[in-house]
Amino acid sequence: GNSNRQNPCLVNFDESRKMGEQVGGSTPISKYKTTIRNMKRLVGLAFDDPRAKKEMQHAPFECVPFPHSLGGPPSIAVKVFFNGEDKIIPVEQVLGMMVHHMGVVAANKAAETSAT
Image (cartoon, rainbow, N blue to C red; front, side, top):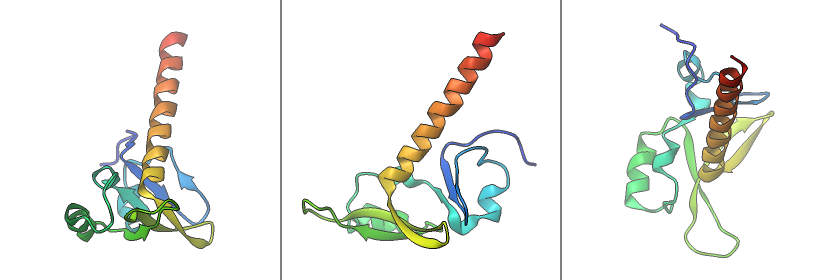
């Protein structure tokens, strides 16, 4: 069944917003193509790295190469439909969204604990 747990390993994009709260439950199932998960396995890998290719084969989201302004091999970005248009977001930025959400959850829990 659906729990009320928060799962910071998922970031979901829909037509109007980035979901940062309550991304557990049925959201990954109902928004399969717009839920980015397992991105931690892709951080720091070049787009052409064999390990990245293997992980990207199983991803339900579209991965695209992301060029760097200073050169070097392209890293990995995800293509998402957000605010009515396709956006290319580096996987490190998606992971940053997850880490930010974890900080919000921790701050809320700390506030609850100190209030009691």
